[in-house]
Image (cartoon, rainbow, N blue to C red; front, top):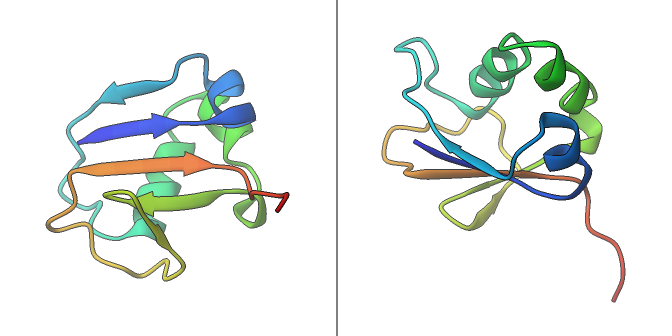
Length: 84
């Protein structure tokens, strides 16, 4: 799975992307975020507030945290966007 990090999430984690194999129990967006927070201090810090983390699956915004990751090839994590 390709994971992309943007803005201050990238800064807190320390890199902009990575390729990882998800554990079998990570099947939805919410289980993915929970697992990501457990990967280390920098991940827990970057993802500490669910209200401040946005998710895109294969370049489409995701608002349903129970959405399946079954056919997803890319997950992007970024802060809320502002501006016009």
